[in-house]
Image 1 (cartoon, rainbow, N blue to C red):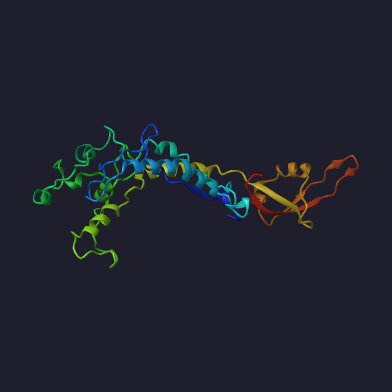
Image 2: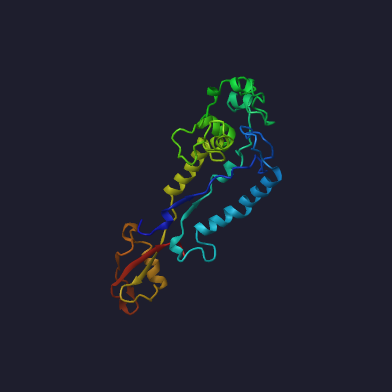
Length: 275
């Protein structure tokens, strides 16, 4: 990329915990009742959602685009920051439900966090209160939430300990630690296929229309000279294919009151963000 870091597309993760209207998801066990240790503290989530929205994402953008003080040693280190999908994610947090959700989600994932049979006897053969077969879950079907809950993650991956490292392998499939791991191993609180598609659309738009770099040209034999307004204006007509670090650029002769000015040779030293 010839050190043109503006061609690096930095895609932010969609905010995972917002509802239509911009309010954070409420607390509770809905979507988290795959394991008895899981749940959402509403007040803590409210503070976290506000931090992500008001402080973390703006600070991340300033760092990536080199607008934060001391973030980059040079402005040419600035990358293209993509956040155009954040508005869409605000309507599709992990807690959002809709009548258009798959039937399994509407009938089997309880909004009260009571999706599973508490009986040790009955739960062994019919774990879901709704009575549906686990195989009826559709992990890639369209749904209102674009963030996977632990319930989604478990049903999508149905992770078993075969093939994992010895450090993670439980002594029993019913080990409590393995129960926690298997419920989040499939991508809990990560985007669904639809969420990733929204991020990809935003990234593609930025990749197709990268910001035009400003080329810094200096006279070949005078590393500390600056182009005057007239020379700088004339560089804008040059072919972008020639404006690459290391290339020589020859500005054509131009007429002045004193006659014809000599040719000037400049060397392209760097491509950077507009200054």
